[in-house]
Length: 304
Image 1 (cartoon, rainbow, N blue to C red):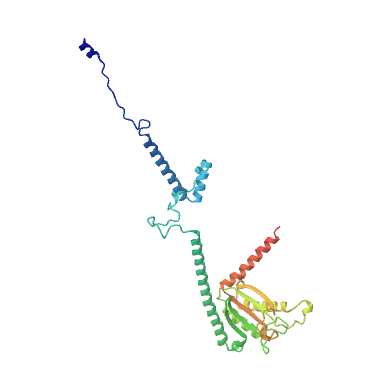
Image 2: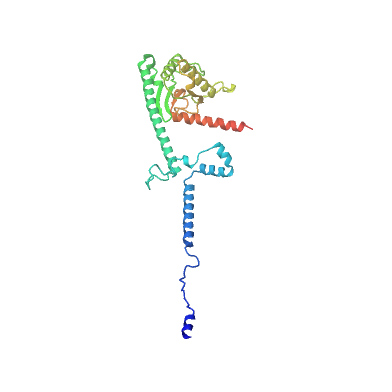
């Protein structure tokens, strides 16, 4: 019986469960991989946005707002750019010295280039005007008829150009008294100068001047202002007769006695003169540019 009891006794097997990760297993690895992938996508997106121009950004925005319009009309995207780095230069291995060239550097470069061009133009102007001065002086000295009037012809290089002044003399006036009628030798002088100016590209300013003595017919509305302007115009006609094109003249002005050559002696004959200024390109731009601005401003005032 005892033997039969032993045979009927149940066998109990105890199994020990090893825990610690039963709740989640390896799922955290999948979540971490998803997080890293999302971060890579985020930083890639930020990098692409940083390297995309404003125009391309607007194109992308327009595409999402009205995709059919962009699809039909077409347009350039970021793939059309030769470099994905804005201002990074051609050598992407360089980390310094060529990246991020800003607008300030571009403006300074353009300004320096403009100044160099102006300096070159000024140098050429100075050379041409010096040659013109020597040419006129030579023409006067080599012509016996003109040489006797050399003391009345003054040549001077000024910041605005070559100034040619034909001054009056007590014994040899350029015009009849109180008149714009030219003396014969004044015609010869002007025609000689006009011939010398034929090959000059620069614009010319022509001014008439008088002394401070009052004009006899001032009561009738004709004063030194009108007289100086008429004398300047008479000189202009002589230069034109010598072959100088009219388009070379930038202005013809009567200055009366507002700009005396001999300020200490307002009645001196030397104050009665004709001034011919062969302007530099800078002086020409300054004069004509100011006149254009004044004309534009006048048009704006007249426009209702």
